[in-house]
Amino acid sequence: MAAASHSFPRAYRIAAYVVCWAFGFALAAVNPVAASDANAGADLSGTESCVSSAVEAQRPPGDCLADLHAPCLAFPPNSKALATLCFVNTRKSWDLRIAERLDALAKTAEPKVASIANIESRYDLLSNLLQCDRLDELSALYQAAEEDRLLQKKRCEAAAAGLTYIRLLVRSENVK
Image (cartoon, rainbow, N blue to C red; front, side, top):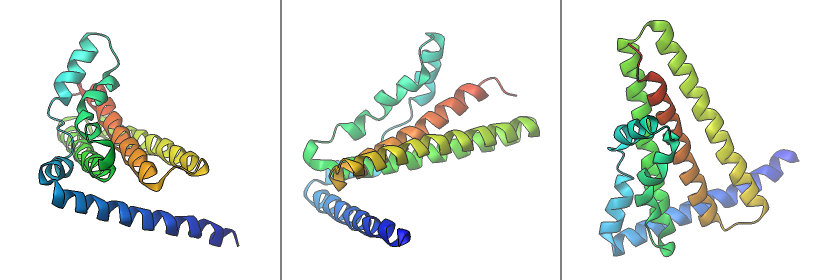
């Protein structure tokens, strides 16, 4: 009985995701420039310089995420599907950067150090994503609109991956 009660809301969630993506593709047909921005995700090219400046100024390097994710937040309120797509693609970019950084460490650092970095990054990301799930469940409890929940969750997941990368970057900056 318990399994059935959990699958029913999930079916609604999946339907809402499909509707949200369909709506996003419809908006993309109307506004191709905004759609290309969403497909590209946020530009993360300034990450290293922002983090370096933050560390030198003794500010939290995680503060860089606000500037880096600004393009995804710039979509108008009626373009939630495009903003969601932007965060999905930004998350993919962060994941790719994490993998590239870990690969570089595997080639340049001692094997034990590279293994530690891999373990730390994996669990940093998992714990960050767990918080995204918590927020999503709380939003469901308060009956937030599915489109708003999906945007919030994808934004959180992009931030989770971004914070994981930034932490990896800071920790591995002086590793040889």
